[in-house]
Structure formats: C-alpha cells, structure tokens
Picture 1 (cartoon, one colour):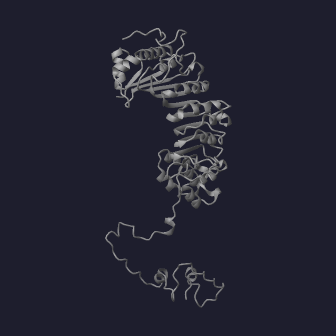
Picture 2 (tube, one colour; picture 1 turned 135 degrees about the vertical axis):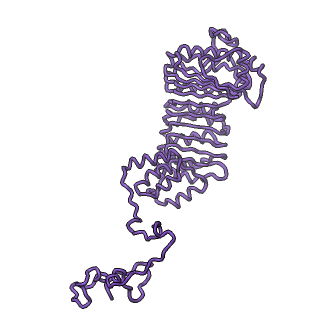
Picture 3 (cartoon, rainbow over the protein chains, first blue to last red; picture 1 turned 90 degrees about the vertical axis):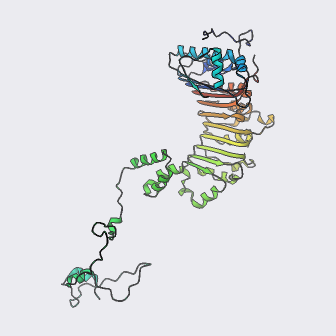
Length: 139
Length: 329
C-alpha cells in the first residue's frame, strides 16, 4: 500500500506551481454532488485530482456525494502497462484526495468509485486502493 | 277499449260510469317504437282479477337457483356512484398516472364528467406530435376552448426525418398555453427558419430539449430567444459548423432564467455553444450541470462550470478520449 503523499505537484507542472486548469469548487458553496467519469484512451487524468483538491468542508460544506468512474475505451484499446505508465501518478493522487475528503468531512461524504477490469488491474499493480469508499467493479 | 288508468282506479270506474274527467290525450308514439296493432291485450293484472291463471313458466335446468334469465328491473340497471370527495378521486387517478396505467385512465375518463379534467390532465400531460398529428388534432378538437391543449405540460415535436411535422405546426403551438417542457426531436434538420414569425412558442416553457441530427447554433439561439422563462436546457445531437463571424455575441439576445439543469452532449458541448451561454447578459444560474463530451472541449467547459459556481449543486462530467489531446502547462 502506498503512503499518502503530501500532494506534491506532479512532474509536468511548471516552476510556478500552476497546474492545468480544472474545475474549481472553492467558489461553489452549494455543491452537493460531484460525478466524474473517464472513458480513457491515453494520457493523464490530472484534471480529476486537481478538481477534487478544491473540495473541502469549509468551501463545500454541503457536499455529500462523490462518484468516480474509470473505464478504458473499447474503441482504441491500450495495454494495462500503458495505462499504468501514463496515469500512475494521477491515480495515486486521486486516492490521496479521496482519503483526504473522507478524513476532512469525517465520513459525511459518500464516495463511490467504479472501475472496469483494466483499471482495477492497474490499481492492484500500483498497490493503490480507495479506503473507506465503495468500489463497484463494472467488469 | 280499456284505458289502463281505469284499472288503477278500480271497480268504481266502470265503462258505464259517468266520465268525471276528460280523457287524457294519448302520448305520441316514440321514434322507433312499434306501432300499436288493433286492440291491446288485457294485462296479467286484469286476467288475475277475473279469475284466470297465468300460463306456467317453462322449466329450465337451473331455474330454481339462477336468476340470470329473469328480466332485470329498470331501476336495478341504474348504477349509483357514491359521491366521494373529488380530491380523493383525483388522488386515485394520480396513482393510475404514476403507474402509467393509461388504459384505466381512458376508462375513467368515461365514468363521470367530474373525472374528465383529472383524466385529461394525465392523459395529455406528455404528447408527441408527428407529421399528421396536427391535422388529426384540428379535426378532433376544432374548438380551441374545448381542446385539451391546456392540459399538455410536456410536448415533444418530431421535426426530423420523413415523419416530421410541417413548419405550419408552429402556428398552433401558442395554443398549448401551459406547456412547461418542449422537445424538438428526430433525425433530420429543423426546417429552415425563413419566417421567424411562424415560430411561436408558448411563453410558459421553462425547459427546452433539442436533439436532432442537423441543426445550427443560430437556429437554437432563435428558439431560445422566444423563451423568457427558460430554466432547463438540454442540447444534444450534431451542430452544423458556421462562419465564426455569425457567432459573435450570439447569446446577447437571450433573456431566460437559466436556473435549472443544463445538459450538453457530445457535439453540443463545444466551444461555440458554451460561448453563447457565457454571452447571456443575465448570467447563468444553473444548479445542475451534466456534460458528456470529448476531451478537446474540456477547457471550454471549465469557464461554464465556473459561471454557475454560486448556484451549482450537482456537477456530472463524463469525458471520452481524455488524454494527450490536452496541453499541459
């Protein structure tokens, strides 16, 4: 099991610490439900942990549901090794953010993660798991 | 000839007795009734009074137990419906509508005149219009005030393909004065908007859904511009590319409320649509945003979500082909 990182900036973030633009919930005090899904072909998934990092009990006090859905595209299939190579950092970061949200909201947020077989295998290889939240295997 | 009235009077009224009252004129025979032929036979009552016996009833197999073959008195045929409170009746009809039991609702429609409004409210709540339906509607309900148009809340107009309604249909859409949701559906293009005066949508519409295979953003804008109370917007299907100069300031004429749900699917989640929404002078107040798009549109959708930031309650974002198409800083 990997250790929860200190949310250090990813390798491809520039020197100023700016990361790619993503959803920012710090100005959304009424948000209650967040659903993110990816039909993955290639590349990183950084927008998801970046968006999740803006959710907190002070900025989003009404948050109650987070659903994440990861699946590989059936149109252009890539290997698990490619998936691990390109998304390992982001998947770990997502797990970190989920753990942080669970901790800071003290269980008030119901987090559900749906994984297909490819993503589940990748997470097992990376030794990453989503603590405290339901994981639905859609394979 | 014996008058029936005399038998009711009894023996005091003989034929030789003086006629104290002038005879009543006989009523005219009803239409379709058999004409009387000759002298009327004496009734059973008269025969019994004279000591005669009735002819025996022919025995049947189950004559002692069955009463099915006996003539039913006229009074017994009248069904008396107990007068239940109308709100209870409406509650029962609401349950039928919840269960989508439209066959029962159609039967209930024929029970009582008091039940008609509630049944119509459910039966006509969601109405689809295909190519020839408007003619049928006009034939069935020639009088506007008597038509169930006011009961329609959700109207779905099929405007694409071979079975689409004609453009003249939109002359009649203001009839549906209480429509809340209007959907323009089907494969094929929306008819060219040559005469915008023909397109008149009810001002009561709060929800607009457009899902066609070919439509331009200007056409969508022109439809939205007629709906000042628009709350919910759902766009899917395909957009015809347009000259970018035509899209400058495209949303500045929109006056909707935009405080409900926004749903953008695939081709309609592109930069031009989002720019139109961001042009709206009154701002966006959507509480629910649901986007499914390709990853190329991701950075266009971010400002849209931010524009709804204060009111946003639910965000659903599904991205396909996410990855290297995004340029990381």
